[in-house]
Length: 390
Image 1 (cartoon, rainbow, N blue to C red):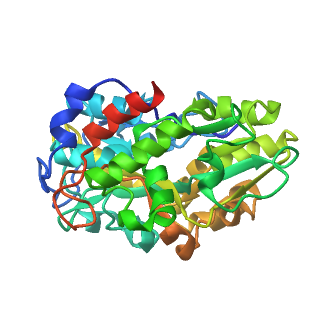
Image 2 (image 1 turned 180 degrees about the vertical axis):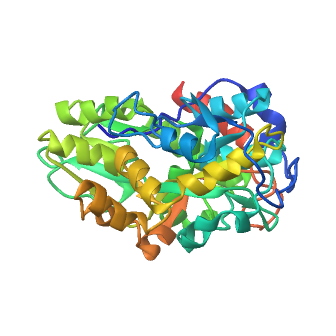
């Protein structure tokens, strides 16, 4: 059973407000100049499936080999949401986090993470170039993390119900949809970007350039579209096992999904297809980030290098169900698991595909696309999402 993250919404608006509205381009702490002796401990905040020690499945254990190799004893805290990750990092006591794009910029702006000296990560050179120096893992020309794994948010449908294959996100925004009550959407404020991405093509007069850099008019249009969509939604999802079950049972027939959900549901006999619609799609790219107050920085750097090595990337990507950041992991997946299709299915080496994906990034008042300082910050996305869902 492969594992994926559960990214939801926590009502922590007051805690998030200062970071979400910031236009800061620096963080506390400085990048390590060299890796010294390990401090014999490492405290991580992770998505489920990112730091397996054999306790879930004894055949998947990359934590104990790391401990043996480095002497750094790992303690990991599984976070259920991006907001929980932000809160835990705010509370302190952790050395690093596997942040998604809807929390990474918040962490940078709140000065909770430090710049990363990528020259100290020997495996960094092998990581796919299209994942490096992006606005969800760097800021002001400074790198704040090491790419880990990634995936797209697909449109999926049951072929026995939706008999005409859709090629546009319009099918999930149609107020008169024949599938009313059986449409699903992702349950997080960052989903507002999906509406903005659709409107970029559907309403070009709005002038949307980047779905994470929205002025008030553009933002209001996306929110209005999602409020209309709410009338046809059967359920929102952030637990992939539940939406997998819903698609298998037929209570959901159309909506946003991840590749791993399609793979698992199809393996169980559900007649499903997926597509990247003509408007494009959003997606997620996770980043290992080091706390600006890390008590064990040497161990964290050792972990970032270890977790991005081909052999370990193969284990994580195969278990979790994602594209590895290090494409050398593809040969390792074929060797370790006798699976020569994984990287093709997840398009791990497809640069054109990756560049077509609008990866999650935390909106700032200072627009992420560099085109002004009048963008709606993420704290307002959180408030709007509450209103959308009613």
